[in-house]
View 1 (cartoon, rainbow, N blue to C red):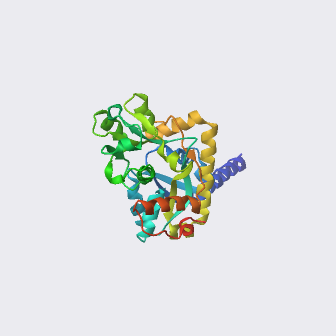
View 2: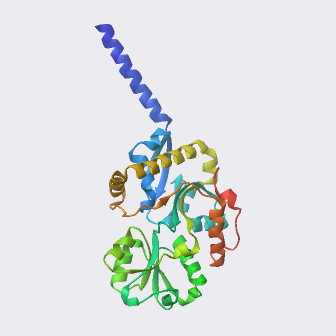
View 3: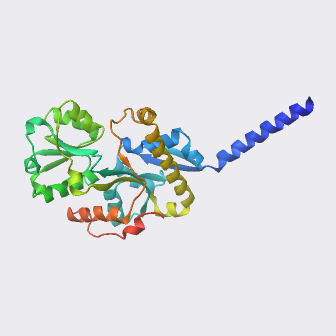
Length: 306
């Protein structure tokens, strides 16, 4: 009996030590996200253990403004954070050394996720109708801001003839309803809410006119951090891939996880993709130069981690 008890205690102690060893071996990563549906695969990877499966202890930190993420990366309060093509290109021109480590989502014509929406009384039916009107954009120099400017230019409308103002997505419904804005560039799920109660009418899925498939968002990190943590990046990508696959297989569960993290579940899911190419960045570099956001095209292949 004593031998049995001793053996059981040894097994328990060994199991506890192994568990502590395994936990100690996990690579700690702090990742910053903004509260939108693009990050559901990361939420799933966190809640269902996919990060841990690939050797990572990931802390997901909510950052309200995407423009604050480069500073957080530079100060090392974040290891990885949300990036968009304009943010990456501007920081590259200003001398900050950041790289894409994994894609998040794409804008695609077969799954439109963003539109320019106008309040009915504004009577805006096309690009020319935006002249003299007040249009809300979710941050100056954001992807949606610069692509909308590009779309106006392609349609023969001078950007100076349109009054662009910054407005956050949660504010846009009320700003359209009370007439403060004539139109707004709106992302899901806010777009469906505004269209659903007729506060606004869809004028155009303008991004589809520019490209049927464009990079929307990605995860980025400091170049030196990425070089020193290649294995962690490989694991991060693998965990996100499992999160995307899980979302597709368990859509209702994914909505519950999204509600837990964001307080809402979007009626539509973005087009998720981990892939980012030099051509993706070149597309935005050309637009960014055209609208005056950057002046030179950086060495694009060096902006993507191996």
